[in-house]
Every structure is written in structure tokens, then in C-alpha cells.
Length: 390
Image (cartoon, rainbow, N blue to C red; front, side):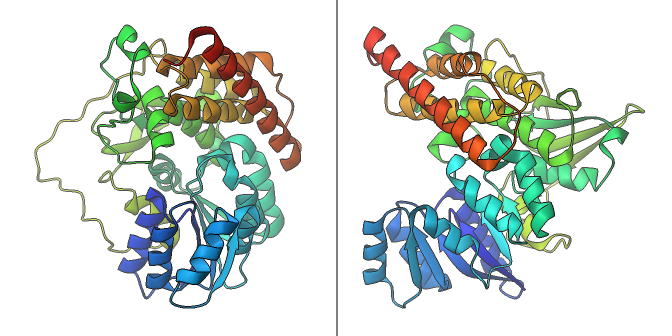
């Protein structure tokens, strides 16, 4: 039996994780739940799973939750609440699904405390991957990837020496603008960017999929997780999203991982690893006729992917700078303060203007994050004053 602390329980990964728990009541139980602003859903989750520790985003929501629960768990809020859930004495497994750099400290603390951490928060690895590995070594923690592409690579690589691998390829659906000409992409609206053809996700990650920044962050994550160089990681656009990753060997052969495009599969893989059990997703339907297509990404139309490779090659705090700028730019786009093409321009300017430094500590990563946010926020203000809201 694994006892879970689920950080980000009201998001898409969180709700899918609870579906996996429902499918395996003899193997999985919920000890702690941390949500954000959706306090009504969190209340319903608490009533269904009765965790001993609960956290919300604000003090006011914590007070509301205490008054509206049918039982009396510990109720916390804010960053301290995330840590309280992640480090609860009864939890041995943490699902880190907080979007953005907000989940960095709780992920690091859980690894240092010896927990199995199933990382759906790719930013934790993008901005401080070496520190996460160090925390896992120091505390005896275990790091497993929830992203479908990285869970696929984990299965394909199976502990192989990185030197034995010629390359790994992670697949991208191409997002809603895969076939659009550059001029149309540059003028894309919020509604168009949020219309993902394959996955149902939160707004931030959906915009990242439209720019291919999400795939860029996954490139950095793959390098960090598996000890690969930038030249060993590649991206292939695969609109059907059935092949999730490929591993290429020096003899020219490849192995591919195939499964339905349902996040419950990689979540279950991490929670039950190394066991593979029947779960809430049906086996892959090979009897159905289908066509798979593969193509190279166009970096001229999707420059954020190229920026991610640049940050990976530069190393140190460069990925943290890129991630922070992107969070600011995407938020400004969703608020109508920037145009779609301004996202990549803000990211590029931040990387060019703020020098990266060798990675030394979590505090240094957080300082780089704050510096990039200040710069990107200033860039957004200047853009709005100069050209007005798009």
C-alpha cells in the first residue's frame, strides 16, 4: 500500500490521479491533498478520500474549508501548507502536480525526506534538476516522471547507460497551430491558442503547447532526468499522440513506446512502479485502423522550442530564467496584455539580457527566477505602453 500526498489535487493531473486511486483501493490511499483556489472541488475530494492533511492557497479559503468539511483534518494554506502535505509523516509517495515554479520547494523537500516523488511539475526539473537529484541522493528519495513522454522514456531506457544511447525522441502533437502559416500564428487569439486538438489541460500548459514551449521544457526535463546531452534529445511532431517517445541506438535501430493518450496511464506507472496492473484505461486498440505521421518541428514558426535548446546548452540558471519569463509572458497573454507572438519575444529578450550562472543552490535558482520575472514584467509593461493591449 502506498500512502499519497497529492499536491495540485484540483488540476487535471490531480483529478486523474484520484481516478487511479479509485481503481486501486487495495494499493493506494490518500493521506494529504493540496489544492489551489477551487475550494469547492477540494472539499468534495476531502469528503470522498478523507485525507488527514489538507492545504489551500489562501488563509480565507482555509477558514472556509474548515467550516465546510464533514470531518476535521489538519487544514493549512500557502507555501507552508504545501510543505505540511508533502512532509506528512504518514505519506511515503508525493505526486507533485503544482503548475509552475511554485512547486519547487515542496518537491525538493519531499525528495530530501526520502519520499517517492512522482513529478508532474516539470518546472521543478527544468529550473533545478541537478538540485532535485542531489536532494534525492541525500535523503534516499526516488524521482519518477509523470509526463507521458518521460514516463515512456523511463520504460524504454530501463536504467541504460546514457553513453549507450544515440538519441531519444519525445513526440509533440504540434498543438493547434501545427499547419498554420507564420503570419496567422503571429496573430493568433487567446481562444485559438486554447483550442488544443488532442489534450484537455489547464490554460497555462495549453498555451505552452501552442508555442511548443511545453515541448522545450520537456527537452530540458529529459536531459536532466536521464543524464543526456542536448545533442542526444530531439523532438518529432506526431499529431496522433499515440507514440510517446522513441529511443535510438548506435546501430540505427529504435524502440518506441505506444499507449492511449490518457494521463492516467503514466500516473499509474509512477504510483505502482515497478508493477504494471490493469487500471482505469483500456489496452491499446490495435484492431482499429489508423495512420501515424511524423514530421520535424519548424523552429521558425515555433521559436520557443529553439530557445529551450539554447537554455539547455547554456546550462546553469538559464532554464530557470526561460521558465520564469515564459510564465510571466503566458499570464500576460491570457490577460490580453500581449499578443501571441510576444510570448517568444519576451522569452528571448529575458534570456539575452540576464546572464546565466552555474547552478549552486535552491536559493540561487529562486533568485534567478525572481530576476527573470522582474525583467519580463517590465518588458510586458513597456510593450503595453508602446503598443496598447492587442
